[in-house]
Length: 220
Length: 218
Ligand SMILES: [Zn+2]
Ligand SMILES: [Zn+2]
Image (cartoon, rainbow over all chains, first blue to last red; front, side, top):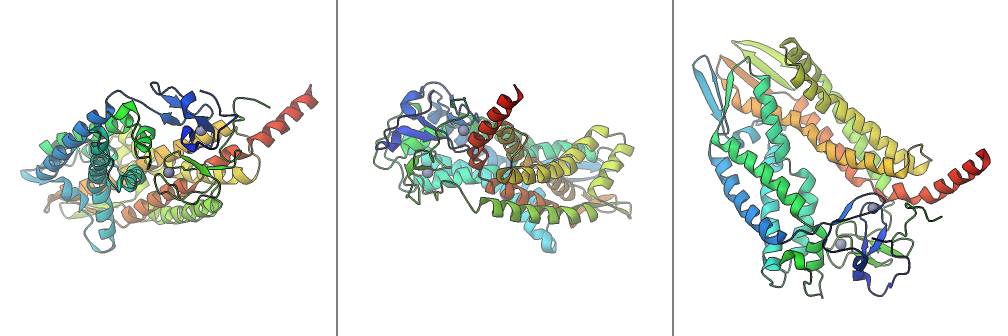
């Protein structure tokens, strides 16, 4: 990988600029079959993985099913002195129901359920036509940009660790057990992490290039 | 002059790069033709937005530490716990590990983040002892780790929804949970507003200064 020192500015599609430090590379200097990172700030530029598109679609569909399961079944159960209570994921999100804390309920609901779900749907909307060699949807670029903007606000994995912390925090107050929804939710967390590491953002954007035919081998 | 970190940038070539999709355009283009993101070679409003969000983040962090995060009622006896009070309580109950997790996630990380963002923003205007690579790594760390501070808010949400056993035991959220969540959100927005390309902009002049200094020293 080398810095583009004598560029052909007429063909800007052949250039790729590091979004983090502005260093510029020529795409044909970068090997499409291996991971390419910026040489000075190590930001990932290209992350090709064979048949990743199909894998990501399968994982997205699995996530959809699991999320609805996780919403339906009890999430955590508690017992103390014969009294018991169970909470679903929605109960946990809506725990802040009084007055100004309402805002927090909405934010938590968004961070642990709505945003992860929205990103799955947006990913399907963008990738399905690309993977099946159809022309991209008319709003695919907006959809993928939104999905990328939402990425830091999807906090399912942090919530899962929060469950473990809660368990220990009330250990001497009461006994907590994980319900089936907890295991489904944990599976969703792991799938989302795999999916994010599998997605080559550069390949997706290249396939959404307006006047160009999708021409990269990764998504097929 | 051709060290590994003196690279040709989009700006050097009279081009503007899209930070969302890495596509390159002529300098006068304003919106990315591929993904629709707004283009700016260097975001000059970046630093003022970084400072504005950071001030908001810090000012919500203060009430988050004064007011109770949650109140626990066991057999009609009610106690209210602040972030630090809750951690001390955990240490008394021999859960030192969890107390450390809470203290790191709710005190150490937020404070370190305020300091790191302020340092990065200041280092753009004046010279810095840290190299561009180290500062870039610091920025990535701040971006990656900031979200994890939300863990305390989630714990409050889980406990308040679950521990509702009439008189036997109940846990309810306190107002600090809201200001803590807002502090985390504003600090994340502050880090996102930072244009990391500016870290690399003055390394050429900095490197020249260092070369001169080395020549003088030898
Ligand atoms: Zn870079
Ligand atoms: Zn773009």
